[in-house]
Length: 112
Ligand code: 5GP
Ligand code: ZN
Image (cartoon, rainbow, N blue to C red):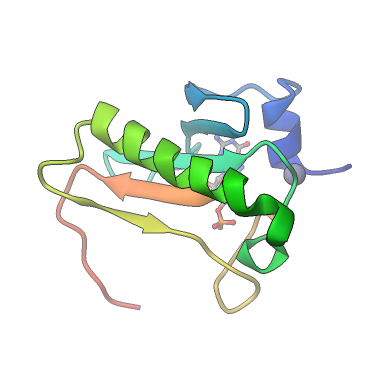
């Protein structure tokens, strides 16, 4: 499948790994918008939140636990941070493999 993030998981495209387990891979965003900008993705190809199905319940749980671990290890717990997932055109999704952005390390605004 011609998917950038599947290629990153398979090591065909290099990435700066932050965390990995059986279900989840996390790596630094190539174009960070804050001091910490990490992407957390399922190893299974899922297009977006809208592509999640019943068989993914446990996998999505693992993904949330991974977000928590990565955020703690990045030192984000004390001051907080943001978790974002973009969906489709209006959401400005550019890579169609489910990913959660962990963004933090500075005061964030909320102006969309
Ligand atoms: P989206 O816009 O789909 O929510 O987010 C895609 C994210 O993937 C963007 O923040 C972009 O900077 C990041 N990205 C795109 N290509 C690569 C890449 O080759 N390596 C890494 N590490 N991040 C990428
Ligand atoms: Zn994929």
